Image 1 (tube, rainbow, N blue to C red):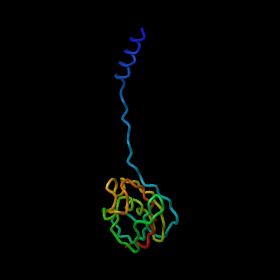
Image 2 (cartoon, helix red, strand yellow):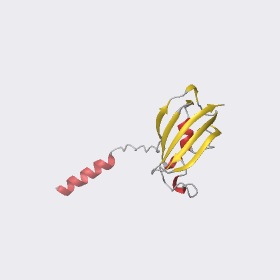
Image 3 (spheres, helix red, strand yellow):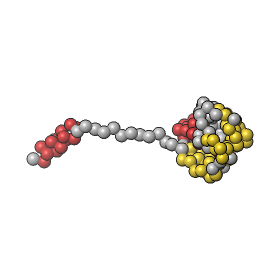
Length: 128
């Protein structure tokens, strides 16, 4: 009797329509430290930023002042593109950037170990 019940349950389970599970890619976490002024940065804008990239232990591994690039064109890692999007001149953000939004399993030179979660401070100087 027990075997018959198990077989019936298995048959019913297999016949049920399955709902796919949506797996979302890791997203950056953004903390707005200071809101700037003026229009928000959008894809296609040339922006000028200062940035500092830190490892989880706080060590600074990359730092740049007055770095300019066209937003949304893949010039910088995806985490920085996403982090700057919507910022205003004079604004500051700190982002937590998962590996799939930077160099991932490769790491970067001898500075960033593979699969590291990076903490990046972004200061938007101006939008051109």
